[in-house]
Structures are given as structure tokens and as C-alpha cells.
Length: 483
Ligand code: BES
Ligand code: ZN
Image (cartoon, protein in one colour):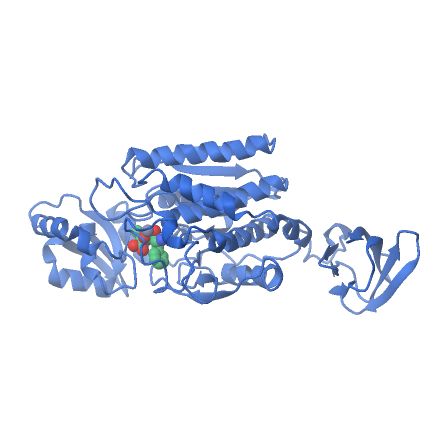
């Protein structure tokens, strides 16, 4: 955690020297062994080392002690909160993200996604960031934090009502380790109700350790992430999104004090044996600090297969054109946000982040984390919204592709920017015929490939029908208009 040190020095000074006697406000946590040793050596009164395994240690300590690691990190507290000694010890045994077989993600929803991306609206993102910043503080113990969560619930529910949907629900989640509440929105899956695709972000904010945080605007950390997922929701509803897998959007309580809200939720999902096929966290999306736009974290808490799916999505949808942006990778160095709660419970999870580590917003966790500091624009967060839509739509669909049966329903023809693309579940070779409105054959092409594209930029404006056949009697047609 950065920049707090100066403001809080008197408080910490007092705090650290009074902890020796009592162990008031101590918490269980895990931390890198090297850092735990450092604290034990220099601040023995404020930390008990419980157990170490390789480079991770279970500790019982006062969280303010972590301030003494300042400078050892590019950012971050450098620890992960654990709700009990058992939990701290147990997490030494966990291998994040390795409990389940890799999920086989595919890309096929170009028709839906290319239209939906056009609906992403920076002004809508701005509205949500300013609404949340307007609560002045969302520190987890403050009443304002729950007021903000209830307001967000209202915003989500209004979007659902405006879309005329009676099949999408929002629920409040109460927690054990914080008075703040979390929010979960659910689109029930049509075909695979018990498989979950989830995106989320934390709704709380912080500027330091004192409990009386009356001003913690948290515009980038993390009103931006909540605004990002809220815009994903608005666009999905506008496009009448009806997922095959159950799709959920989550706004968590109390991330800033140790991933508290997400941890309780992910633990509950794991204890109920829920099958979460992928979790994507949006935490800090609106400060453009690096040359590249979306930075995928590649820590052990981040699933490599899920990361490679997100990269494929960006290759497919964001390489050129109106929705173009770039990506790169970086490392947090530890479980820096709520995705870690999911990966620790055995689910594939990741964090697409606003910049490379070290180039991120210098004002987070200070009173200067405002929308104004980010230039009063939401163009950066809009890229994450697009990635969020692409992820949710492609991960929540199901298809029978991958079996040996030919399924015409999983073959697709779609048109975008005068390019006809096709993905067929036919046996090649295939033939592609384009017929105009008065029935004239305009183009006939043969291909050895069941997937590909045809440039139609030399055709004049008008109605057309594309028909693709293989030599086994399979056929698919698509009517379209060129403007
Ligand atoms: N948004 C931050 C995480 C972050 C900050 C990631 C800077 C990358 C760069 C998050 O809200 C946060 O502050 N996390 C804590 C850790 C958590 C376990 C309490 C942190 O990094 O201090
Ligand atoms: Zn934070």
C-alpha cells in the first residue's frame, strides 16, 4: 500500500508501540516468508510467526505492521487476510488454480459481440464512477459503504426492469468478517444452470488504517472496476443476453482489508461444490499508465488457460477497427485482489489490470484517487468493459462443437465491415455462394477450410444471401445487407 505512510506516521507510531502488550486488532494472515522474517526481526512485538512453508508463511499480526514493508513492494500490503488460524495454516498447503482440469474455451459469438461492443458508452461508465465517488468514503466499516452498495443494487435493478427482464436477480450477501455487504447479480443459465461464469470487482475503498475514514474516494480503486462491470451488465441487457451457463456479476465488500467479502463468497461456492468455469476480476481499470492497454496478471493466482483465452478474445475482437486496443502481461507479486479468493478455492481466475505494475495509478489509497485525477474520462475503462462483454458472452455460451457429430446449429456465418466470416461444423471442402436480391449468383468460391473469411468490399450496397455447402449434403444460409 502506497502513499499512506506520511499521513499515518503518528498513528502507526502509537499503534506499533502499544501492540506489544495486548494483541488487540491482530489478524491471521499469510505473507511471503522473506517479509515475515523481516518483520519478525525488526518488529517482534507486533507479529507472531505461526508456520512457514517454502516462500509462504502463516502469521498472527497487526496489519499496520505491514507498513514497515513499505519500499519492499511496488504496491500492496504484502499480506492476505485469513479468517482463522486454521485457514491461515491451510492456505500454506493450497496450490492456487490447480484443482480442476482446464476448461476448453471457444470463440463463436461474433454476431452478438460485434453489435454489443458498439453499445459501450464512456458516459455511462463515468456516471457510475462519479456516483460511487460521491459517497465520499466506502471504507468497509462506514455506513456510506453500505449506502453505496444499496445504491448500486438500485442501479442494477433499474437496468433489469428497463430491459423488461424478470429472469435476472440481484441479491445482497451478509458477511461474518465485515459489516459491509456484497452484491450478486444472476442470469440463470438456460442449458447449464449449474456452471458459472463470473465477473466482479470490489466496491469498498480505503486510505489507510484508521477506522474513521471519512474521505476515501477510491475512484480508480475501485469505482472504475464496478463501473466497468455495471456497463457490461447494461450492454448485455440491452442486447437481450440469455446465457446458456449461469452468469454472475459480483460487487464485493471489504477487499481492502484482506479480500474479506470475496473470500467468504468463494469459500461458500467451493463448499457447495459449485462449478465456476472462470472468474475475471476488474480492479483498477481507468488509469492508463503503460503503453499497452490491458495488462493481464500472470501470478500463480492467475490461470494461464484463462489468460490465454482473454488474449484470444482480444486478438479476435480488438486487434483492429473501432474497438482496437492492445495487451501485455505483468505480475502483482502476490494475491493482490479478489481473483485470489477464487483461485485459492480451486477455480480458474485472473485480473486484467490498468497498467504494468509500477506504472499504475500513483494516487490509489489516498484522498487523491479521484475521477478528476484520471483526466475526467472513462476511455480506458471502456476497453475493459469490452473485454468483459467478450469474456462473458463467449464463456457463457455452450456448443456441441468438439464432438464428431455434425451439428448445423453450431455452424455460423456472420458479416462485419464487409467481411463475411464463417465457422462451420462441416467436412471440407466447402463451396460458398453469394446470391443477390434478384437471385443472381454473384460469387462462387471453393475452400479447403471449414473456417475462414471472404472480403465483400467490391460488392455494391444491397441485400444478399450467402449459402455454404459441403459435399456431404450439409448446407447453411445467411441473409445480410451491405451498406
Ligand atoms: N487495487 C488494489 C490492488 C493493486 C494495487 C493491484 C496496485 C496492482 C497495483 C487492491 O484494492 C488492494 O489494495 N489490494 C491490497 C491487497 C489485499 C490482499 C488487501 C494491496 O495490494 O494492498
Ligand atoms: Zn486497494
